Length: 348
Image (tube, rainbow, N blue to C red; front, side, top):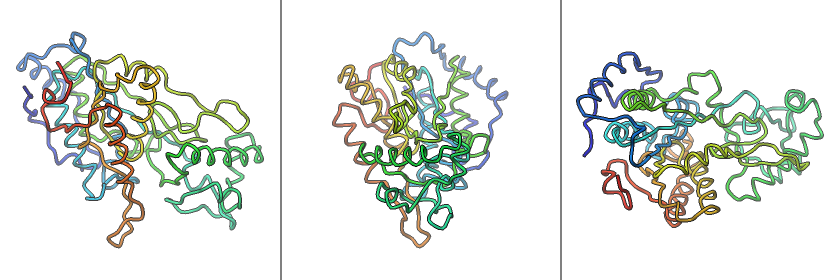
């Protein structure tokens, strides 16, 4: 049976930029809540349920954020945050652990505009797509100063690397190189978790004696890292490794009885993470796909308004196609508002 929502929870805080819960006060409430509801420590759970929350950070979830994921409605991430928090509170007694991912970036990375320059020496605009044809024709080239910062001043090496990288992205068929506005810069307000999510995960941790860890991703300057499990490109043009898979976390996820996933954005970091998890599952045992539950109502696609009532970019179709692909592979696409005991193949 679902637990009642705690009195301190206010759904409207989901859109209050900078909302910061009082963790000391939360600890006192958690102690009483645990006693009142006879909630046991997570270490004793008969079935381990991992809730993986992807990139529910300020820049993605508040309208003031630099890359707010509003979806087509404009309210996407706000309502997703509310549903995620309420899912945690209603099922707090059976969720074993909550892991939050933290997209983490620095000033000069291959997907930020000022890594690049056009023929006039100016940085391209955010939301520009750079193709292999652009690289071949010299429409966009790395800023020479970036070579000094990242590769010891070897500009020719960097030219080969970006050409290889963009070609690898297109060969994989998932993404082209998309230049994003600055977001989740380490140390910024936009990097931290939405306050309502931080409040919910800490209440869970304090009530159930669970650590509620985080996985950091996205710090390699020469590759995108949408997925928490691996960067988009693993190799350099010269055959040397560029980065590696998060093998430790992959293994820890698959040790759980169930993995429940939500977050932002459905079209990018969520779908990439699930894609990579599915790849690991198919390589190990396709039947393991049935232990994955995707909270379809707790994620939204990247949609970029054009300021005139339309969209500069709309990745909703890609998000919808990804969900169908995961469903066909044997994963479960569910709603957070449905009792988890009604989910297919779910046994407590």
